Length: 457
Image 1 (spheres, rainbow, N blue to C red):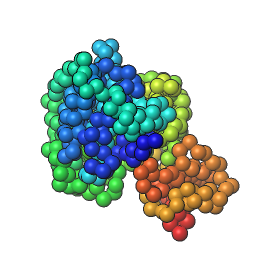
Image 2 (image 1 turned 90 degrees about the vertical axis):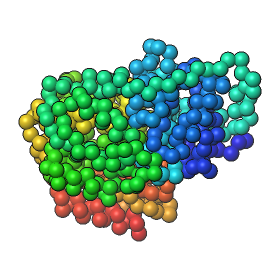
Image 3 (image 1 turned 90 degrees about the horizontal axis):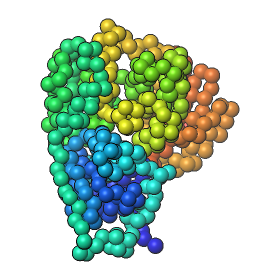
Image 4 (image 1 turned 120 degrees about the vertical axis):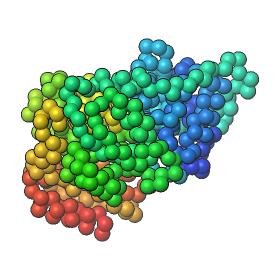
């Protein structure tokens, strides 16, 4: 039996470099993925991490040696891989691999996968088999010929024209007005895309940390963490901007700040976009994750749509998007999924759509979300390191045994006036807590403190 690889999660690959993930391990994983989906042609790209170019290059060499054609996008946002594979479904593209560890620390790297048509791969749909084969050096040597009969073609595709055109076609350019927008790329992958979009949009951009830099001089970008929001917030206030936008490292999540510099929880953006999509597609299905639900469900039902709760995680939600034929899906963590974008998540479409709504509604972002924030205040996601996450979950369930329970992802317990979700991290002994109430800030504070005391006892 081979030693299992530690870098696999339930829906992608994340590992410490070089012990858990390096160019050789990544090549084994990439080849196992290609064999799992019987790929003859794949698209590959990478983020700005210092280890990413080497992993990308070796991956291309090994796959072409195995007779697989590779279209190499090079440095890109994760969604560019999704878009290229979705658009290439009719031209023989069988899958895509993105070399990225998203918002993990700088000494990590990882891989995300999609099969033909940008269909995801998770532990429920082939990733376990990929992990098993990649862990076996014997399998790898048997599948990679020493003297191959056929070498795959390695072609470079650095031009982003189709991708940029695809983004612009998803919005109504006539429904945009000149706005001043603070853009914080976090030295990640978003900057080059903004530079290309800029020529087509009536916006003035104030650019922060714009140049891609795998050294992460300001730290790994993850605006979900409160300590990473001040720079964007202050810039919005300083420049009297209409909007602030910040991204994580691979730019598949965008985070919004209103004209006052206030950070807007992704939960409220989900509701905002759900309502907008239902105006375009009356009666359609909207997906949401289980961490915070009341605001989204109320908005969707009021608009005549169908709200469907699904397990957290990009691969799981992409699978559910197709299964439910949903037009839009949103996670409070700022992943936003669109049917017209291959059922995949985009970090560019959400802020473009919000800018469009600001014009169409004739009101700033603060006014678009204020009422919903007052109706359903939330704690924000709070992490707690615990010795035994499973034991803590059992203890919490016992303490709130009279509530309505749901196990879609972690433990959710609802009462008439408040609910919470508590779930484990995939990679560390951490529990993640989210609490919401019905228009009751005092109850929110009381229940959040109460739960944290029990979790951390």
